[in-house]
Image (cartoon, rainbow, N blue to C red; front, side, top):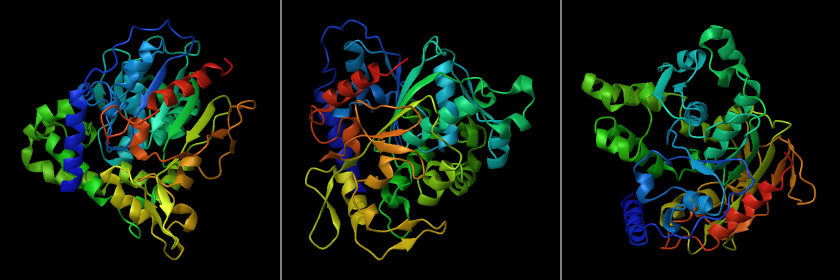
Length: 416
């Protein structure tokens, strides 16, 4: 863990030396709907003070959001719960985009024993968001599950929430009134089918998850930390205000969260992802794109081992994920065999390509269709954080700016 912390500290120092690297004049505004970036586990976005120093989208390359805005695109980056479930994060995404108070849903809140309402956002992040001003959603890592569930709720709403809530109190997110507001979904290294790093048989993600849990606990009683890097766990009564009202309950509430099924660690497991996927379908009028990266290679004995250049934080999880072992099944019956070994340091390639059972095909620029996953060509020699700009050296991952520009130009060509 000390090695990981040191790596992060050095990366932050490197970035501060090159702060505000993008200073070019803005290009003419592009004819593309707004683009909303959604981070994954442990991430952050606009509204977190940390984003001013080390933007999640761009990292040591500088703010990718600002860079793309300078190229004429309208881009935003939300800041949702770093360790929260896909459901809670989707609700927070909606509240930020629309400028409302977070409503986690009466049925959902009752089922998971937490508050129904959360933080209030006084200003819509995306002004004028409607069917005539659709958004393109881009999710990194667990942000992929977040935006897929968000799209499902926008298009179909939630029958459980409709049944549990008086019509006058029902959030538009659960009513099905938000149809036709999403143009496309793009996932980057997303664990659509979970990550074996979260599996007890494999292991590897323990240090990362434990570190995030400790940080979440700390921000519960230190308001300053909550501003720098918000964990948004007020629904579990883990906000600074809740702590100072009843500090003796902190450990009890933290343990309740750690035992809950309403958190990212559950959704990231193979069985948890499979359960989540049963509630989500490809929507027929939304375009879907997925990118997977591989930063491992065969060592000659059937193991997939990390390549040189992988971020130090990922080498141990990657080696654990890539270790050859006898095939086994999860308690839910998912077969884990050799196809799960290649990875980007935190997510298995096979999981990042598309959710099992959903329509998919290899990307063909001349044959793009909505309601189907367009599986983009595998990106070699990128690790999991390279999608965000990388944490290895000042200036960021080579080709990162071109990668985003190329993809946004692709989105520009989509009908409607």
